[in-house]
Length: 131
Image (cartoon, rainbow, N blue to C red; front, side, top):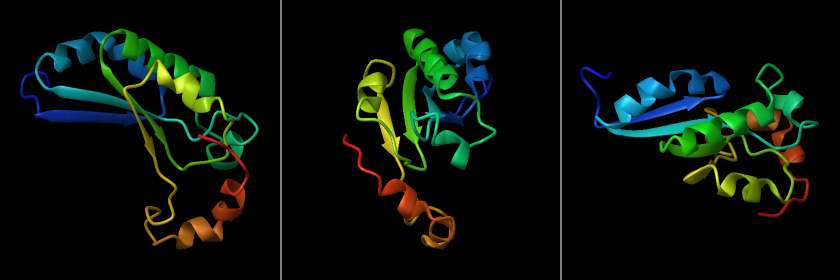
């Protein structure tokens, strides 16, 4: 990609290992518009295992976003699927991301909401939370 960069590159990941390649990302950023987006479904450790049991911990992903952002690379938190979260979650993201993407999966689950309905997603996200 460095030799033949696209106009825009979005890296979407759940892995904090993205910081391992900061030097490459910084070089790539000189050649194209770059956005590193980290999926973080919730900030509640009690909710995360229900939907992303194999994903690394929330704090590890937040730390990775913080490091990428501090390096001067555009960052995004992808809250997808939107799960119950604490009222402070947006404040925690405010200084470490340039944007927040929120996906409720009502339509975007690939089956017009049927997959989300089958797993009881509507029940889980009906918990009260404030943005």
